[in-house]
Length: 429
Image (tube, rainbow, N blue to C red; front, side, top):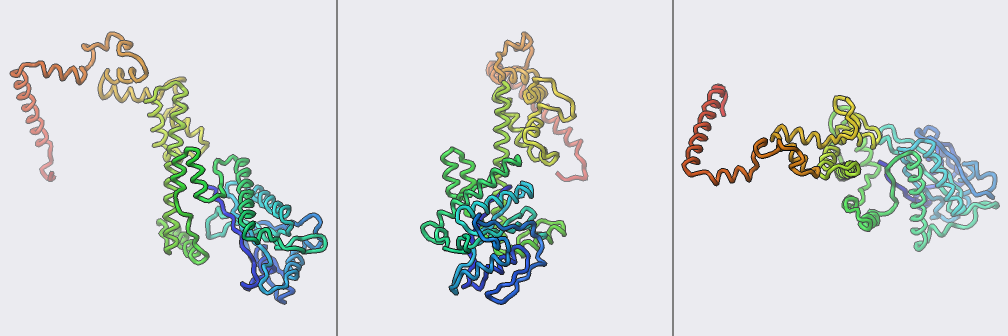
């Protein structure tokens, strides 16, 4: 399932960090920091799929030289506590292709260039070999000053101000969500991401009358594991997989996150079943079937979801057609066109259990009267109803009832004797 993540961090000198070191690490290159007189060499770093630099149109030629670019960034800042760079960390959808992931990251970086006039250095990373293989992500490192023809000039205070910074970042979060959703749509994926808070999403769900989604969103944000706990949980998952056992969290934070993810998965499963049942019911009703028949087909669709998915997780519509029984029978023989499979199965079951009454019941459910079945359905040709049998009992003389009671008791005693004979003496009951 596609998930949304965008975080913004700053590279501060007061924290002992530098833009040259940050850039070298993220792109896996060797950069010599002229201000510090240090060499940052991360050429042995693995998992880097793609790197590129984007700059404004009137930027100097050296802007495409990574070492020169970030040394110029360091040189433009003179204070000991300067913020030299800003990092935008993006989660990339695993459901789309590598080319699409590269394109939407490039589009987002270009939006940063156009909007703030900064230099942007991008590194796209593959999932860690021991971690979640869906964890494609990108590190987008930007300058905190505008890059113009003469070099770095004024600070991008719009991102630093308490009044405007939050608004700007929220707008960029919306841009990133829109880029992902368009890519997911192009890839034919149903899932979408949402950059809004859980509370905002819940309110929107209530406004459109989607109570189930609102209940799903009525939860706390997922707890962040952190590097240490994440590493421990990752090793525990690998060990559990090797030993063929179920993964059990080894940290307190890991247990909280694991429980929350399991709860969300269960809720999504329930939602999928409900949507499948609704879709099936609508199709059956549109085909002219009665409410009971459509309801039975919907129930079969919901209960058969797991079995059908495990057998062949293909297109939703094809699964739906197979579940409601419109394409083929379990023995792979074609069904007669226009046949109401759910109603026919119900009739077979009821006829088996209750004789002709079963067919009559189904016939009535489909909107026909009892007399449409023909003269054979009279009281003499079918089993008496409960009311009719009750009337017979009430109208019988008392002496006849006592005789019949004695006969019933004798039959019960004979049955008990037969049961005693059939019992194995070696077994205790």
